[in-house]
Amino acid sequence: MKSVKRYIERKSMLYKTGVEYGDYTMNHVLGCSHGCKYPCYAFLMAKRFGKLASYDEWVEPCLVSNTLEILDKEIPRFKSKIQSVQLCFTTDPFMFGYDEIKKMSLVSIGKLNAAGIKCTVLTKGLLPIELAEYSIENEYGITLISLDEDYREKIEPGAAPYTDRLASLRALHDKGRHTWVSIEPYPTPNLIKQDINEILLAISFTDKIIFGRTNYNKDITAYSKYKEFYNEQAEAVIAFCKGKNIAYHIKDGTITD
Image 1 (cartoon, rainbow, N blue to C red):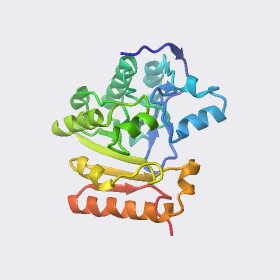
Image 2: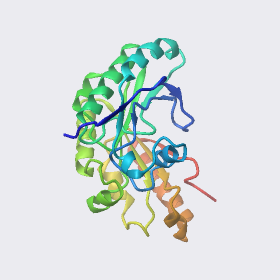
Image 3: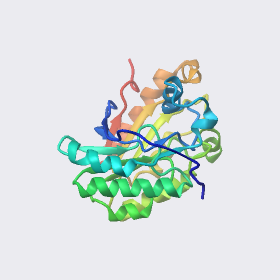
Image 4: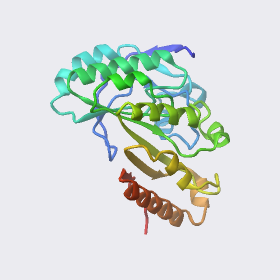
């Protein structure tokens, strides 16, 4: 297990997100030890707005020590407006190897559920099996853009291995919980040659699949057929989901003319 070495305090926690499939969100950690190199949009924004100075600082996560106190104040104020709260958009609630972050996330989800608020979770870590004891309305997801572990070590160096990630998702599915997978940011063939159908087969048990292209990476637009590629991959996802009766969402901008 890894230890959180730095703590910060914040004045607010719950806020309305502008993400197309989101409602409210909370980010109770600054930084992320997964260190994704797509590049990570959250890291780019944090650096741009001066919240941290470097990648090395980003991958040393800071836990918001007063998270629970803020939730106790904000949940009564916002609960009538909230349809769901996503953990998280700019960090990871189950950062691989960080038990202290995991515990804070579980307690936070418990507080939200106790107020009748549904939670949606997305992680590149491991989904704790304890989540099976929380609200049946919750949705639990993982990011999965490949099955190639060598690629994972290169592009998501601090995240959980793909097979372990999948196993934690499957365990919650087998407990009757709603699960989903984000295949985003999906790489072009000049980054890795792979068959998306192999990924789709590996996650065919899940309830929903979200698919999206890679952004903010010059290697993508350097691939001359990237528009055609993403159109074809999106069509494959749609066809697979329709055939398996799986809900799906194709991110805006993934399909182009």
